[in-house]
Image (cartoon, rainbow, N blue to C red):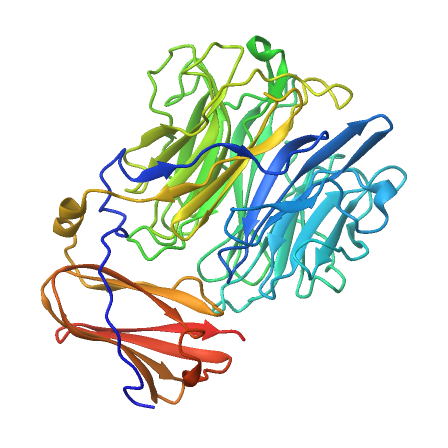
Length: 542
């Protein structure tokens, strides 16, 4: 089917991580409640579908006091955040014994996955899955049931080039003994979880395990070591890595010291806070691809000041060594202002995006939500106030001292970010969000900063029915972009024309050209500029 079709397009300058003018690259949408309710929604998480960027799945602790009931909210959009639907209760049996603390993921097949704690006498961690975008949920599968636990952090390996493609992993801390980090995985969420592994054997207790997948299918876990003296603040971060799908682990104790803020904030009605780590990996095609980032909240340890600050660490060698701390929030040091509850995600351009609560623009008894963004691997930062109003944090009674939820979250999808946070400005805690678009506006500067040829990985990948292919050229010249099947047969010519220096992006949709009749499988797209040729693999799932 050589040269089956040909079409032209307008070039767009927007994707080199070095191309952004700091402070100019984001368009922040209006704040709105994700799923308005008369139920308290706190401790929020959000994840994205691996092949359909319009599908997002969020969850939260949902709390009713009369009669007392705790569950997990199910909040879904299938149109890129324009509308949300769902429920304040996961309907996976047995509903009476749900205990909240959700973890969320979507696997390679598009199945929604939810993990949660179990209520007495069914203490433990359990999973459910949904095959209809969260409307109905399976009966529970037991992950572990021997004791009490912190919430499980979960992640699915959705990289089709990974040797463990499709595997779902979970990590948590057991609340007994030395408070060890434990781990399990499943290759099919509809089947049983594997045997529990204990990751560490330190005498110092652990807290806050967070889990992430590397660019080659590695599994990374970051967690805090905590003091054995009240208020049990975080004293160091440890890091564990598996390169064989979680079968064996290398564990690095105390990879860098921290001084976390576990305890309460008296100026904010004694709400409970922590300095637990969040982890992310750069999976973009930028120069920082593969970099691991860990973010915490600290004070009284350089580079943090005397008030709580957001501190980032990074590793460029798969966790063997780590940078010194990088202060993320750019307000004045030691100004008496408080930042807490950071969440991190890296977008497809290599931008590091960290959201957190902040009171720099309001009184110390209140908070707003900020996003700090770096497009150069954490060297420089721009701060954005993404909330359009402030609120006064208050504990949710009956759930432990100072409880208002222990985290917020953010997910990056294509050219957008979706942060989620809990805010009680309506009288009860609700999940709030704002769609944020990445939209750099200094085109001439962006073109000047393009110094090399590069073909980027298509997104999403795998895809159905469409995917975006992008590349950059530092010189004017003739360019061709073609698609081939696994036998080397040319399927289509997407571009075959002269183009000036710049960055280009094209949307390839099989639905627009049904006569091509591509079947599920592996395809290759190749860029040729005369002096530069590069080929990348993409996967179509129909």
